[in-house]
Every structure is written in structure tokens, then in C-alpha cells.
Length: 306
Image 1 (cartoon, helix red, strand yellow):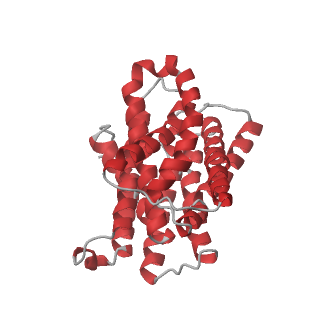
Image 2 (cartoon, helix red, strand yellow):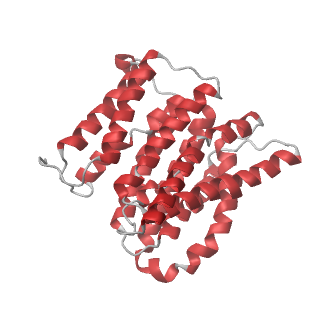
């Protein structure tokens, strides 16, 4: 999953060629993260669950990331508590989001996770004391309405949410809290901000062993090789592309990654995963996509604030 909350820490005026390359990196990483359900479903079919993925793939990336994070300790030493918060919230978001995609349908999980604009409005208002413009309030309303429709309207109050639904919703909330922690931090380098999520995810998985025993079956050696490639190529590659992209383009343009990720995930799940969209998911998804686009391309200054 991408680390979009690093978007506020970008070079303000990079060369045009770098901007073009950065946008290409963002679009590419959006496709990578949007298609991440595909290998996750493969490993799920092989007998692994989300907890096992965190203990293996994410832990492998964490081991590779720790030396770089430690190398940058001189920069983040005074904000170590914020780095821990970023790692915890990003780690929990990754853990829950991975589990949601492996347990439930991709389309539903992605759409519920992308309640992000609503969480962002609430977090910005109550934690950062931001002044909210009408555009952001409209985005939050559209997002909440979309999720309400996807969940079946008033029927959502008649039955409890599934475990996959809850995981996707809480993952979105944790992702937003990680973004808020990222915005508060001033001295933590971009690499540490990005890579700490893998460390957090692996750490949460280790502590989670006291509550849950992960499914780690006896798989063919080729499956373990593919899992290692998924960690070192897919996860690390997507993270590297995202990190480069958000470092060289403005935040408003970099937010296109969220839109790309959502579109790629939903379309690919229908075309490649055999999933079907129901009427409520079409309507709710359109509302959520509209809300995400409003957030991605809104100006930083609005005429009316509340």
C-alpha cells in the first residue's frame, strides 16, 4: 500500500524532466499498488493469511529497511516518538488492509478503505485544527454517502459488518492517522517515513502471535521464492517509485496516485479476478471516486471556511 501521507514533503520547484519522470513513477506505482490484490489472492489460495504475509513478506522488507532507517537516526532522533506513531499506524493499516483483501472481495475492500477523504476531514478538523473549505466538506459527504450505499443503505444497521469490512474501514482510519503524524513531523527524512511502515507491520504481526496463530502451510519451494520476489521486487519497487514520485511533484498532483490505485484495483478485480459490480457498488464507487478526485485536485485555498 502506498505512502501518500509523505506528499507534503516535496521539492517545491523540480526541473520539468524530473517532474515528468516523477509523474510516470507515480502512475506506475499506482498500478503496482492497485494490482497488489493479485499476488495476495494467489498466496491466499496457497494457504497463507494476512498475518502470515506480514510475518514473511513485510518482515523481509523490514529487515532490509532497518539499516537505512538507523543510518538516518541523526535526523529523526528528536522526533522518534512521531516516527513510532507513523510506523504503528502505517503498520496497522498495512496489516489490516492486506487481511481485508485476502479475506473479502477486492472491490468492496478497496471502496471501504477509500473512506480516506472523510477520515481526513475529521482528523484535520479535530487533531490539526484545520479550517475546512466547502470543497473538502463536500468530498467527505460524497465519500460517506458512497460507503453508506455500498454497505446496503439502511440495511447496514440490521446486521454486523463482516471481519473483512471492518478491517478495510479501520485500515483507512489508521492510514489517515499515519498521515496526520507525518504532517506533524518536520525532521524525519522521507525514506524513514516510508520504510517504517514495513517495520511497524512486521512488529504488529509479531505481537499478534499472542492472539492469533497465522496460517503458514507447507508450500512448494517455488511459492516461497515468489513470496520473496513479491517482498523484494513488488513491495520494495512500489515503495521506491512512490518515494521518488512524491519527492519531485507537488502534493496536489501526487494525490493522483490515490485515484489511480483505486481505479486499477476495481477494474482489474472485475476483468482479471472475475468479480462483479452490483448497482450499489457502481453508485457508491462513483461517489467515492468523485470525492477522491475533489481531494486530489482541490486548491489549497478556498473562499469559504468553517
